[in-house]
Every structure is written in C-alpha cells, then in structure tokens.
Length: 150
Image 1: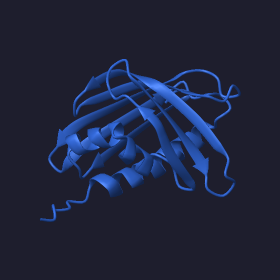
Image 2: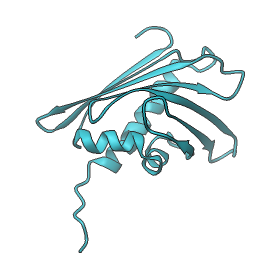
Image 3: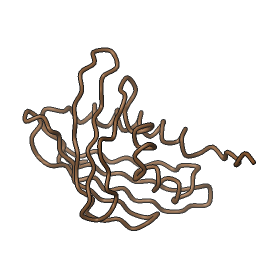
C-alpha cells in the first residue's frame, strides 16, 4: 500500500450483480456508503461511462458536511467499476481514483477496492477505517436473501 492508497479485500455472501447494483444505485449508495456517525445524500447520479455522481456526507453529531463527486471511467457489469473522485473543499485538493473489482466465488463474491490519490490532509488510516465501516453496512444491505412478498 503506497502512502496515499488504501486497498481492501473481502469475500461477501452476495452475488456480484447485487454488489454492482449497490455501488451504482443512488438510494443503496446513500444507505451503505457513509461510515458510522455520518448520513449520506446522493445529489445526482448518472451511472454510465462518462457520467458522474455528486454526494455528501454529514457528521450526525456536528452537522458539518463535506461533498464530493466524480466521473465513471470504466463500468463492466458485475465485474468492474472505476471512477475518479474529488472533494469540493479546496483544502482537500487532488483527484482520487477508485477501482472496485468483483469476482464470483463459491460462497459469494470476492470484492477488492483500491482508492489512490487520497489528499495528504486525510490520514490514510481514517480512510481505511471508514471503508471498513462502510463495507460492514454494504454486507448488511446485500447479503440477506429476502423473498418477495406476494
């Protein structure tokens, strides 16, 4: 792991299709992406190559928000999502690159995430911890098998 990069690896008990959708559905992203102690809002999402998104996280205790957004660079359904990402706050300059790989395995999906170019002002361990919390929420959203109610 380089200085401003986090890499995460998990095996999730969900299908690649469900996980892929959770990253590209605005309501799902708002539910699982904000780490513990934050709420999230997706302001816009155009989930196609060349399209983008804008969202914000709000600290539930203080009410302070930070917004960010990016452009989808590569989308291979149920396999790969690559996008750039940057904060609106000028004190957090630079552009990050996020790569999400999904690989079917016997018990679900192998998920690998790499986020590089994290601004120097953000301690990498905070980013890593935030992703871990978000992935716990992603599992809670995507792993249950809930039958349709007829």
